[in-house]
Image (cartoon, rainbow, N blue to C red):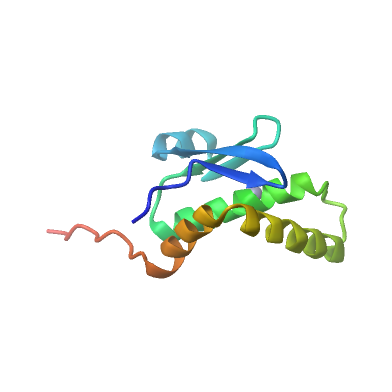
Length: 116
Ligand SMILES: [Zn+2]
């Protein structure tokens, strides 16, 4: 498995990706967070597909910020700007998406310990 990505460019903003453990999520009640002001995306370490889902979720928040989408934006505005933004994110971050695809398509969940 390739290493978790540590940075991603979202609409010309360089974000650090910070991977955290269960302690952070139990303190915040969240599995991920995105801060435009701090240029930081935080993701809880988890099973491969869960990490990929959380990272994508936070990337979409970063795109929404970069595209000035708000809760009042229409569905068409949202879909149109997210599509445009994600095209840029995909083009600018091939290594992140290689990792992401590996997590979603080819990783297996960790084997659970047998109960006695
Ligand atoms: Zn969210």
